[in-house]
Image 1 (spheres, rainbow, N blue to C red):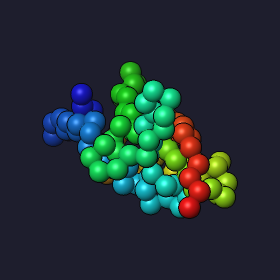
Image 2: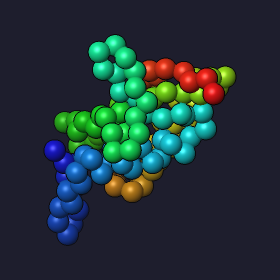
Image 3: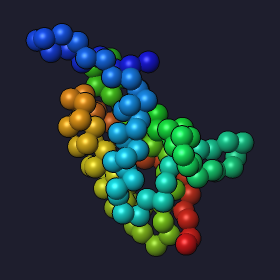
Image 4: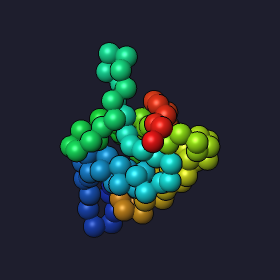
Length: 116
């Protein structure tokens, strides 16, 4: 369960949980994002602590790129598409910069809206 990147000196192996952590940290910098979510038995739960990585799914594709799927809860009163696009831009830039892995697709699944 890891991503392999090859260069002229050898091979780098990055665990998917590391990419999940990078994705979480980058996403949480976006305005309008309350947190990541996990849907269990029809109930959406705001994830905290070590469970936040349940809200991130990393898949390695056949063309040596990765796809990222995020399950999020957004703040009430924000424009959903604007917040989602900001999360996509931030996550793509950060993951590609830190890991040198190409991100081909990022899906944002809005699980709920939180009123403060």
